[in-house]
View (cartoon, chains in turn brown, purple):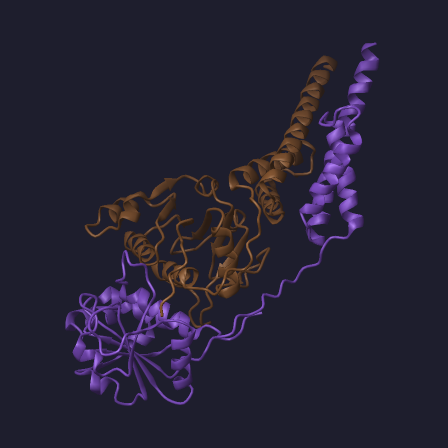
Length: 256
Length: 256
């Protein structure tokens, strides 16, 4: 008896800076094997993307692929962002979860109510720390220590196989509407801006603090309602801090 | 906690009539990812096999691959022979088993005492009925009906992933230390104070907003580390907003 595959309609596969047209094609093909259709690419090597798309046997999923200039935009409508990585011992803020029943269960639960983005890095270097900061958590395929680095198309195939295979009953579905990344990213921007305006961020450490702020907000796992509330708050704080800065400048110029 | 992979030392991967050097290389690479070393090819297209082997990045597993002129010879020392196929409804003597916990359990049990051959057919036509006749049973990767035919390298990767992964699902051990209420309350106070200073809180609604802020912070279910981080941030913001207020008062009194 074959149980139906788990529906991956809500899954968004995001290839970040892919370089090789064969790999892009292979990822797209693996998606069609497991009923996944939504492919997005972030800053692909132009030539590679064009070549992959124009291949005679290119899957529709590849022809319909959307292109973005940043991860934030590419995952804007997703409620959960999971990054894949082969790295295990780099000083990651959060150790990656193994691809297994538990991690795929978490993703499936999220998929049942919202879009979930699964990020794959470039063939050469994978995802960077900056990329990681956009992810709620990281996932790694358990591999042999002799070679932990997997081919891109094969990684996509293995992850989608695990996600789509018939699991037993889903973990009880939590009735909640998670915040979209678009909203959490707006909160991150405002929080970072108020940290900058209040002198918390030292010059030259901007990038690090922005990542820190983003990760903090993501770990809060905000509901849509709370995200809206928090965004209103930080917006008002930013406005006030800007006013104060403006007044100070005026005062200084008057004193001068 | 990561359990070690299941030992695939006794597994023999057999590629039957492979045609494409890239696919042969990809299969070999996937094997190294999952700790499998014994590759055999049956009547490969000569040129393809030679090309795959001489690729600069060819895995050792490919360099050590053995070549045979028949399946019978290639699986001669194995105690179990399993053929992979995408075909499900061809009039097969035995319907294939799904790749899942059960089928991989059967293979693992055999692997613990003897060599097991896993056969993959050519990219074009897969394994033939003649090939099937050498197999104890057949196995198929559960795929979407839209595209049941998988890429060779990806099939190898998915099968070896399933065979090597630790059978029992791990209980994900979440190493976490929740924030104390003392800390979350301090955050609430600072957040409320910055909301007050920035004009978010309208006069007469203090109590309601304080409750709102507290509930929001509690719903974040902060870890101890994050609570400390967030408290540092909001404290700095409060300090800056107070400075601004003070300056404004000074300015006003100077103007008066």
